[in-house]
Image (cartoon, rainbow, N blue to C red; front, top):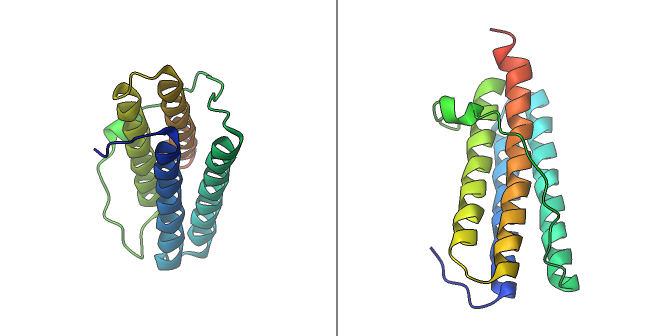
Amino acid sequence: MKAFNNVDEILDFAMESEQKAVDFYTELADRIKNEEMKAIFREFAQEEVGHKAKLKKIKEERIFNIPAEKIADLKISDYVDSVVIKPDMSYQEALIVAMNREKAAFNLYTRLAGKTDLPELQELFRGLAQEESKHKLRFEMEYDEYVLREN
């Protein structure tokens, strides 16, 4: 895992991660044939743009505390198999890709929080992990609503 020397490097890393998510969802939207799914992935990409903007604001204003809140975890992503990204993915497969991606981001920020002794950085990483947890929950709720309830 990358070593960070200061808060700005951490925030730059986080913004870079959010940009990778933007690129990922945009590329996925471009590869998908189904127009409805294209729109959904473009929406996901826009959400990630908003997260990057939030991080930029944190960096500029030097306000590192993200209010803690309890985020539910349906743990659906713990029980689904990984999916290979392909142009003709089903909506179910697309949701699995999104859940797993957000879970990985949550795990990254959680690990980073555990690697620092500085309370303000721990709080920042926990806040970033919380944001990713919200995204994962959104995809899990969507999966529950449109996949599990139909079966």
